[in-house]
Image (cartoon, rainbow, N blue to C red; front, side):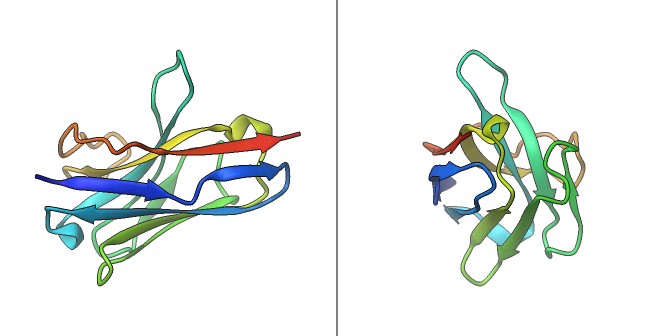
Length: 123
């Protein structure tokens, strides 16, 4: 069964940086597009960034464009999210997930969410 483990979150001051990682197992990592998502309590999970299977194409939500960079290492089965110029509104639990294909509205491959990694940005 496919599993993901997110890591790299923490507490950072506004303007700071963090690099999130997502390690996947139980599926052919490079066979899928992947996405980073975030969620705050009481709110819907929102899509932040996506990347295609080869790491050539990426797309970002407007709120993070030019500040966040999604990337992947298909040898290490790991997805990354480099977050720069962090803002308090970036505070959330961050999750990764495989997608059925590449596209901003592409459905999830499954509902096997990891535990997430908490990002907290202080002002």
